[in-house]
Image (cartoon, rainbow, N blue to C red; front, side, top):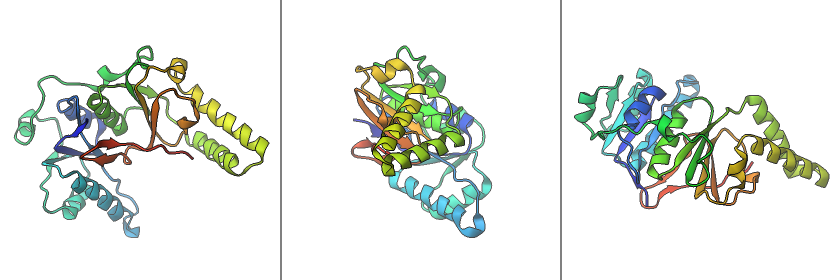
Length: 251
């Protein structure tokens, strides 16, 4: 059973978040990280809505300590308004003395790069696959991997052009003629298969495979183990009593 850490992080910078998380990660404990909302469309209420969403997540986790890591001052101020009963600790740089006043750090850092799989050992553990260059979603994946005694696999970013292609094929698969549906399914399958190591798709040894994706339907592949698909890094569903709840998503 995976427990939740009593520390929750709202992250505005991936490098700082990774450095601090590396001293907080422990097997069997998931460390929640929530990406800072962007300052966008303020006059239309989008910024307020984003901050409310984040604050609802923080309150639901019932943390003992909340860390604000290099947040935009406007974001930090708004979030504090949203949960006045919680006093977050604002961190701009890695300051071990300051951190130790509020949380307990591990002696040995468990860093992102040490969790990465080279592909040869990715078929015998809980595997977390994440797209794009290093960002906060990779830190979240690392936290999940340590909690579940797993490994990470980083793959190429999905482009906007790729997403448009996938959406078109998904619509055709749903609404096209029989032949069009078969062609669309094959196109989606080939796209997903080309992004992953061959031995991973064919493996029957992996305990589970989880994806953090912009929208690739990896579920079309015939995995021989349990798999989970998530879109973005803000959709992890947290349940304090049953650890982390995943659901399949198809498009």
